Image (cartoon, rainbow, N blue to C red):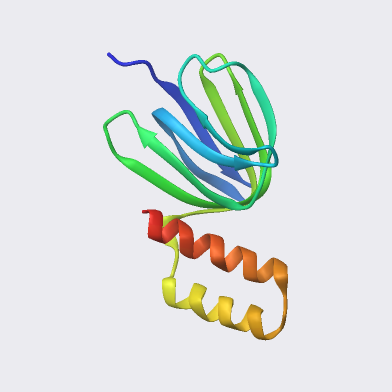
Length: 124
């Protein structure tokens, strides 16, 4: 059996995804990071961006994550996000409308959230 790590992706309001994985890629304030089994312990601040999880069964889970923390020790990875949603939960048309609205309102934070949601869908 290949080495695995246990992943918990949790938003402020719910558990988003939990399972075994071989690789997780996330964006932190220090840049993009890939975590595999046996990685050195870490604690970091998540930036808004897609999180990609390569599951143990060969699948891929992509989520749009907006802020939070990442923690890894003893092959357990926790992603504690302010907001997180799986790519297959995202309504693309709604995200596109939100992006247009944010651009016209010059709302940079809303624009960034909409862009991340659309990037997560594209990566999925």
